[in-house]
Length: 593
Image (cartoon, rainbow, N blue to C red; front, side):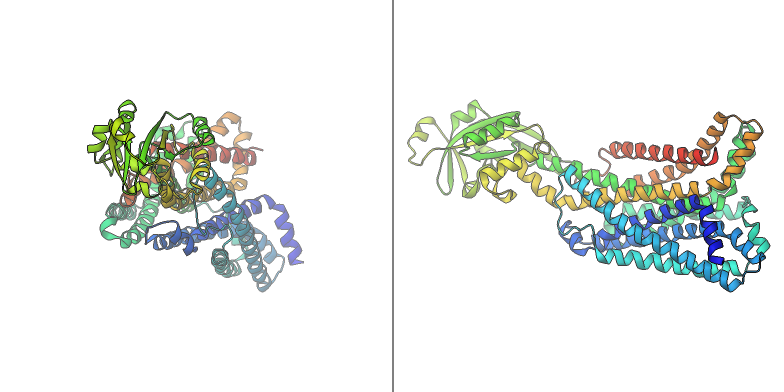
């Protein structure tokens, strides 16, 4: 009988359970996606040369576990709030507390285990989809990466089941020790914010100092090494929560005292925000951290992606050099519509390559002369035979030779002296396209046809350098973009879950406003303002965290981590706005029926 009553309650609130299930599924899916990288040591070692990347991921796992702990805590309180009234009624009609406790325990475990198993499967599917999109669109080279990784699945299952076992025990003790009447009226008790100046001032001071220490440790990671990451992890998380807890409550209380708060539905909006103020501070702190992690990871990933062509361009002015190119290979080169192409005749011994000086005077050979290797700035120099013979950069010509000729010494002779050489004449064809990455498929095909390999050690030029750099940075680029997308999805899940979980409870308030003559436009405006606050506040904090946090990557990035930062910020702002629009659309459909 008790089970039938519980199922009736479940059917009655299926929409709330759907919000709960979808939130938990996304949470466990994202955790699995992160652990699929963090626990795969072969992948981490083969795809990055940074020795402490494994420990960095362990710190990331700790941070994500903290976020998951708070997230599940809130999800459990949401589950508890849905069932308090039902269990109160069961007690009033004579149900034994032991039976109710057993039902609570089983229901909590059933919800948690089901959501976790489905989440792991969803996480595997997301890992496959996201990884394939990134690999194909960015041309990445990865080793030992697998979408299904058993240790990651076990870690996810153990964490979530363990947390739900604890949550079930908490629910059992909480509900069985609470009087039935209190359970019936538990949702009618508002949590109004109370201003405590001394306490909030202390929280603000401690929060600012904690965040300042975290920023300093990230900026001085070269000195602090691994300890700096641990310090930043603790201080920034603590400081973010304290600032939200102090400033958000103070802001709500202070705004109500201003006259503009009484205009239109501003007072209603502020009351809505203050009604769940304590829960909002915890969730907004999590969202701010996820915002920083997602935006930071995407920014760093795009930073590594943007510096790959820069590092390729600094190596040579030409994409590739072909010795004795066939007619078919010349056609392949022409199909790429190269900006420049030139053919030089030469005769070679084991140690010397002889060129005709007149050909270089007619078609000067372009070399790259670096000005600042850290910033990847360089000059292009057009060399005739005399300049090239004396230039320190003439090795760039020999890079375009293949085999043993790549290490030979170039010598430029007159037409007469060249003709006297007994060695057979050969041809070196060099060319430059407008973009190596854009033509990487055609260049790969040409390399296979001519050199019978795509190993960059067998040929020179910008394309060979691109393959080498892409091999070094593909892992870091993939990790940044992959984790950025994962954290962005979890951010959206947290915000949507937080906002939509209270939608049914808010429905009757909007009905009351509708009955007293409030227009639909005013109601939509109130919803837009309320949800905008919940998106804007963590967004601002997250951006500040990212701007300071990018200091960490100065020690591993050749270019500045702030180079081209506007692009990932613009993309992220568009996605964040899209999440906001989706959230208010769903929220309106629930509360404005």
